[in-house]
Length: 502
Image (tube, rainbow, N blue to C red; front, side, top):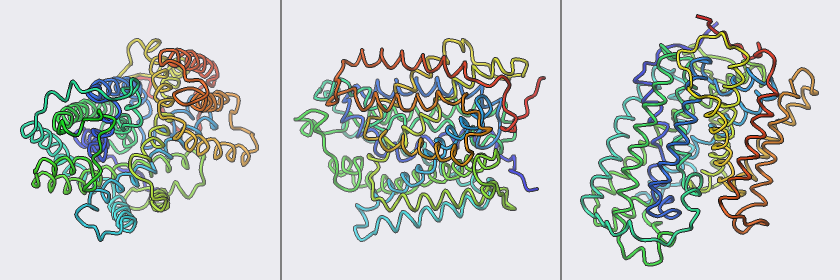
């Protein structure tokens, strides 16, 4: 039987994390976060980085325990059974499968300024097909592409930042207000911060093809995320300083940079830096392309793992001679092509994807504490310190982040999760699916959706931000305790995870 091939080094895993994190986000997020939070967007990045680091620490321990490709589909199944496994795995796949399409949308949006004759939908579809072909060639080919492109992706944002600061350092911009008081939190989701920083999980999804997953996966998540956060902070500062003061007459919320295909190109052209705009347009083809290839591979592996655990039909578990889950990859490309027909923009799609990704990660803290009780004897090369405090805190942070995605995003994401989950239960006739251990999932998702619909600016209950966070914290901690009590007595054999007791 053909198996996935373990060929990825620590360097390749770090590069995969960086390339998943520095994708289309760097082309749009500085502008969107500046609109929402102005100079406070720097604190938004730090807050988003802290949240992402905490969640990454949780998954660092889980990653050394479940070191297989598509692990996000296995973890909830392992601790809470098949219904929970389907919900968590399906949600992860839902977020992943939309990401390649979003990345190519960013590319064609930027290229449209230089190539007005370009049919954006057709060009995006051709790029997706090309990336699918590269993925089909195997993990070794994919890693070579990613390693080379990621080096470029690191130097270009830093080079652009230095150029903007040198050519237009308007330090007075840091004292300009004109943005919403809660913009620092809205920027985490609507501004694309969490969308950008959650790329650390790529190391987990490729763990089954790593040479030394127990050592390399936690290191790759931490190092890759630290590098990416540094790049985004420098870029955000450069953007804030480079905006001409005359464009801030109406405050940061009134800033408009929509010409020339993308905000950074519009800024460069306004400053007379035509060489920089050319570099940005070139990078708009390279950076999102590398990220799209990486996420296409991880989406296919989550889909493959769901089928391998018998949560999806068996054909999705097929692996070709190159060690690639080819049927799952084909399904990922097909869904991406369908999504591109919707004509959405980068900014509108980010909220939906962010909500799905954070929901899929929210189960991590629950599963970690559950496994501490279900398998205390298992050797853990990395063990999260103060887990009894940090795991509930991570779950609370995840709940806040999902809520901040807003009703406009959740009204699409939640039905996309719940309807397939109910179909799964109907197909299985609610038999042998550990439904009791997964009821908390449904209450959690419906509760967040209800809170998002009722609470917030221009909603039925425009509560103060502090009171919103208190209510969400109480709700999250209640669900966390219920979910922990609902764990299986023993970890599920259906997850096909073999632990070492060394």
